[in-house]
Amino acid sequence: MPLLSRRALLRTAAAAAVTSAATVTALETGALPGRARIHKTLGLNGRDGVVPDVPAGLVVADTFASAARRTTVGYSVIYPHGVSPSAELPVVLVLHGRGGDHTSAVNDLGIDRYLTSAVQAGSPPFALATVDGGQANYWHERLTGDDPIVMLDQELLPLLAKRGLRTERYALLGWSMGGYGALLFAARDFLQREVPVDRTAVAVGALSPALWRHFGDAAPGAFDGAGDFGDNQVLGRRDDFKDVAVRIDCGRDDPFAGAAKDLRMELHAAGGEQAGAHTAGYWRRMLPDQLRFLGAKLAD
Image 1: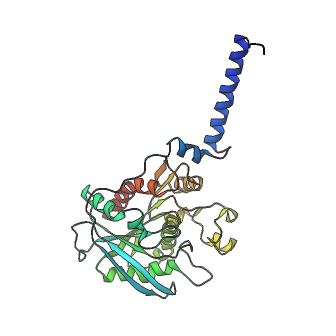
Image 2 (image 1 turned 45 degrees about the vertical axis):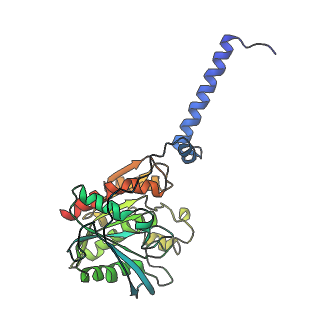
Image 3 (image 1 turned 180 degrees about the vertical axis):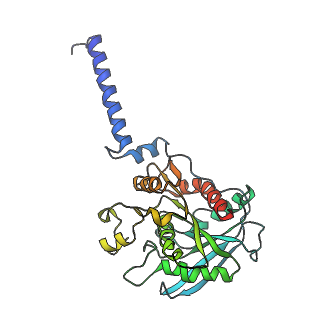
C-alpha cells in the first residue's frame, strides 16, 4: 500500500477537521439529533441541584372534596423552618408535573428545605401550597368535567385563606406540566382582574414548562383536540400577563427549550436557558433562583 505524501496527509486531516466541525455545529444547532445524549455523556448538562442541608419546615397535609375535580383532593401547606402554621404568610401555589401529586414537590425536589434555605438567605417568609391537579390533565378543564383551574381558584385559595394564609396577593410555581399550568392560571387570572376581586396573582415561576407551538406536537392526551389546545394556549397572550412578574427557566437540551425561549422573549420575562435537560436535577438546581424571585415579588 503506497504511503501518503505529507501534502495528502495534511489534506486528509483538514477534511476530517472540517467534517468534525460541521458535525458538531449540526448537533449544537439541532440539525442532527442526539445533542442531549452527547451532552449528558460528556457531562455538559450541568450539575444536579443538591437539596440544602437545612432543617425542613412543618408540612401540614390534608384533603378536601373537590366539586371541580369530582374527587377527593390531597394538598399540603409547607412552612419555612421555625415559622408557626398560625403565621399569616403570603403563599405560592406549587403545581406538580405529569405523573405527580401534592407530595412530589417535597419527595422529588426537596422543596421544603429549599424554602427554609431561601428564608435563611434573606427572603421574606412565605408558605408553599401543593395540591393534586391530576396526573396528566395539564391543569385545565377537560371533557371529563375535571377542572383543576376552578379547583385552584374557587376551592384551594379560599381554603388557604381560612387557614390564615394571605391570598390577596399570591404567586405560582410549577415544573413541566405544572410549569405550563402555572403560566395558564396566571393568564386566566387576568380575566378575573377585569372585575373586582379580593385576590390576584402577582408572580409566576415556570421550570421547563410543557409548551408546544402547534397541537400536532403536543403530548398524546394533553388536550382534548385542536380547539382545546387553542383555548388553553399561553403563547401569543402577552396582554394577559401585563400585571404579572414572570420567570421562565429551561435547560438548553430540554425538548421544550425552543417554545420556552419564545414565551420568555414575548413576555420579556426573567430567567433564561441554562445547561441542563428535562430532569429533577435541573429543577432542583434552579429552585433557589425561582424561590428568591417569587419571594421578592410577594414582598413588593
